Length: 80
Image (cartoon, rainbow, N blue to C red; front, top):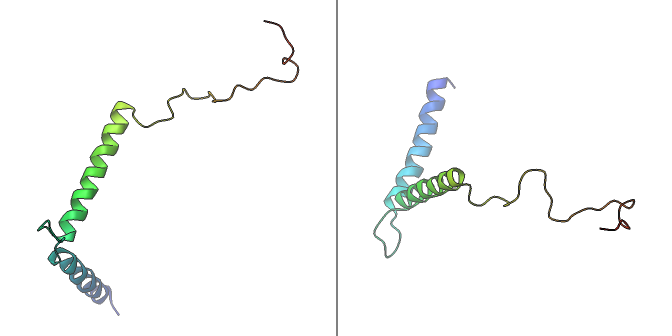
């Protein structure tokens, strides 16, 4: 089997699968599953970009900080 034959087989398989995804419509919406998936992909990418740009969704702490303050055994009985 040559490279051209392999590419033809892959193109046939994936082309027919994509055609099937694009030809089946989401009930009640009138758009295809392929368009629905593409819209979801674009929306998730845009939301990730917005979160990255504005710093939303992180831990809310500076790097190197921890939520629980660790006090060493030597310093536990120190007075303030």
